Image (cartoon, rainbow, N blue to C red; front, side, top):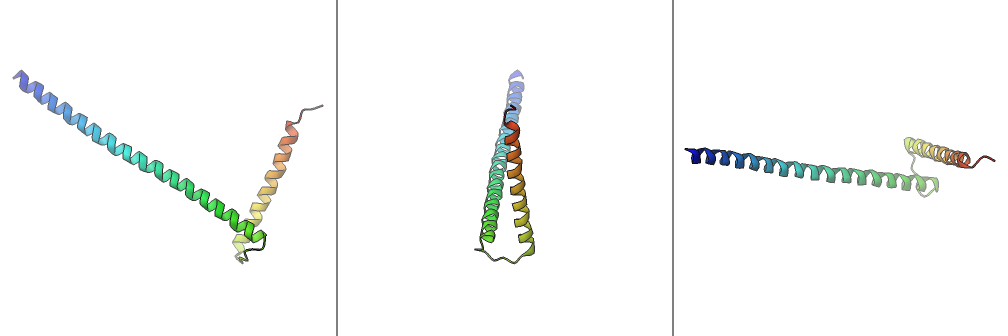
Length: 100
């Protein structure tokens, strides 16, 4: 009788461990896919950013004649923001200078 109880508990414990192992493998696979998707999303963002910079530079340099009103607005906004950031960097550098 005692051997049957021990065997029954042993089978139940093995079943629980197998279920945990299966769930762990599944969760790990999901996590790995999510990490890969996050990396791909980041790479896609970087690619679009580089493409946007290339298009903007080509438009400014006259290499690309793209008569899309929104594109011209965005190029102008980007230029304004670049100028603002450059100005702010100068202000930060001035603030970092020691007072005499």
